[in-house]
Length: 259
Length: 304
Image (cartoon, rainbow over all chains, first blue to last red; front, side, top):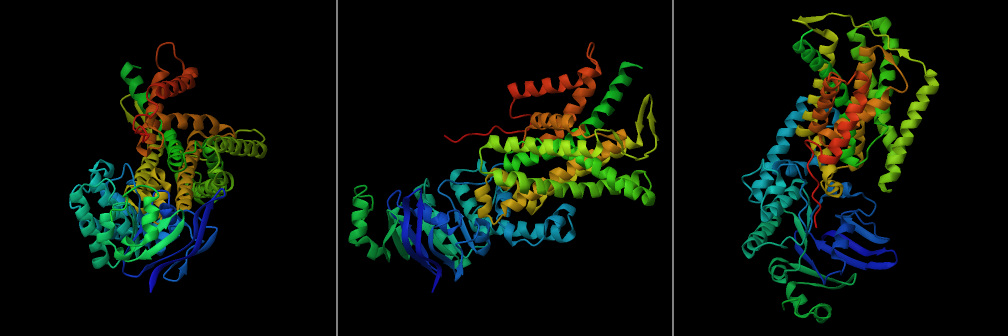
């Protein structure tokens, strides 16, 4: 059974087709990678899933619920979280506050409670803080919680971003090039972290990644997008020997896919 | 009066004036923070808040009396009413313009300002309207300085409102959502934050604070006028810029500084009180030239 299901998703901007009748699914409990040459439409696909782009055609379902008409914050509330290629932490907020903000849709206290600072709101605030601390500890950030988030070293910021995504309590986590700009040591830690997120928190992972070594080691399924068309889907082994995939990559850049 | 007496007197005047400026400046800065709009209609909400307070008080005075109790209840009701008015203005006039070029929405704000001002001109026929509060003249004498209870209550209420706002913004989930929206709207959406709802809350709070200032000013100075929001709107804008527009502590600080600058500035040799506004707006120009990000604003670093 699949958690995320895309059927015939087509998206075009001013006449140019970005996604062309894409069928794609993420089976429950899996780590899935989406690869493809630059400009293939991978990030656009992410933007469709999270509700930022509205495809002209198709259907996008999470666990059977149609999401095509939902706004981004409703998609988040339904259980999809996402990180970006370039880290986008909230400036002028501490590490802890960044992660706490992730729980917005999980809180019950209303604005009135907050303005009047009712006891129920205060209790919830304590709970929000506890969950944020747990998410930070989970990704291995155990200090510097009160620092302004954007002053942390880059590799840490990436992990804070993942912690913040976890704080939204997603069922599916989308990672857009999570390894970009990391050292090889940090990449090992990232692989470990992604596996732990799936195994210990039961969250499905869908990642876009250019580091093919990492993709082949980590993923259980790989899908390949080229010029807005899904050209292959299979296990890492099957993808490595798929003729269309090799052509798609060789057509762009020689040896881009380290096969 | 000795120099010292003049100093303490002007200090007191400056703090009272600064409290009004700060309350109005907060709305300016909050709205700018979340939607990057200079809401030039904000001063009018101060004016409407004054009239709303007057209206409520004229209904309540027979029951609660025209003293501080009646004024306090009117103040709260005026804040709620004008808060909703602010939300309606945002929904009707600004929300459809949020994706339009920035100049369009700025002009819309000026239009809203004219609508409110001229609407009140028509209703009041341009007359001054007595607020109808009777607050008494008691106070405390410290040497040659007389501090009225009214001044104490006024400054106290303003300080309490600002403290409440600061706690709301820094310690609650909605406050964090507000800050998140002001930094990165798309990322905020990905946190499950309903950005439109946060914008509405921001307009509500900002407008309610302006209404609080308007009602208190009406009660304190005794009369209302349809044009009373114009100048304080500009002053509050100046205060917000001095403190760093978008920064909430900045607006409080900027309001206080502007109030003090005005009350002390008029005491300088050769500078009479008629020069007060010249003084404030010169400060605005100086800040814009030498420190456009204000005292507490952080320079926006453009990523290359």
